[in-house]
Image (cartoon, rainbow, N blue to C red; front, side):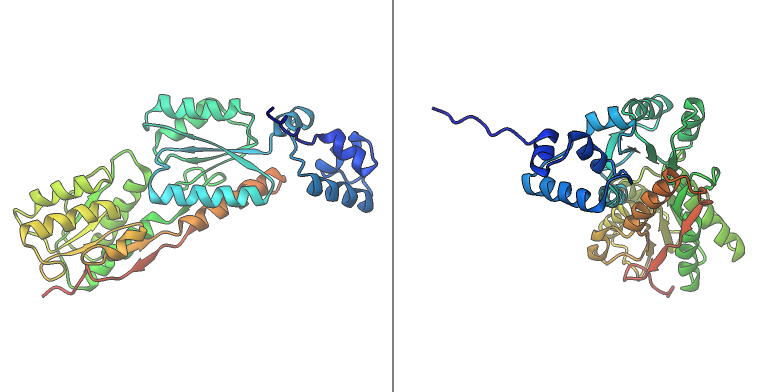
Length: 336
């Protein structure tokens, strides 16, 4: 005969073993200041001993607090967002919070609004938005979000609710590096037109060329994929009226490297290439890729720090930008 499954301990079991009322256990769980330290420790010892896990949904009904932070993401499978989300989750858990994550399949207004609606329906206490399209701000304004929220975008258009890596500065680092190597004909393959980060990197590229008084070219609008970088490279390399390319991300740079190899273009002898992000594979491209490093994990940790600060009622921090770093490898070289 199959043995009955052992019942999980509940709050009344903890109360009985600790010799207190279940209301006292509840106060300990909610960190009430009215509980004597010795009583609190006795209850906590029993909780650890029996492996009691509070029912979060029930606690939310009693305390009107879900201890949940919502995350809206547009590309959580990519290295950058996935790294930030992992850091957010670890920092949130250490602070006693859990995440409710929803991914949107497209960046259109309806998807963004639906994702935010879903998170709000989960009674989240705060929201972190990792969907860097301009339409995000329209949805936020329309929903009149009342919980603390933070967007990981670089424009600073909402300085009380944003945190980012300085994309413009990163693009300028990449472009300046190529200029310092003697290149004067520099192309830019950018990300999608409606992405805030793509626009910021494009502006940094144009600003640096303008400051160096070099000819500017219309950036090639890409889609972040290696597939696009490859086919754009095959077309661009037919004319070879440039000696360097700043790619909006490392994946497009990877595709361009593939095209160069196929077309017999030596990198960096004939062509210098710089990417953006410093994904883990970038150091193992052929040749290893010069790129701009973003500290995605630090972005995640600081995002939770900002959110917790606002949940405590502290004054919101003005838009904070982290400084990116140029990582020089073998894909960029001095103009012969």
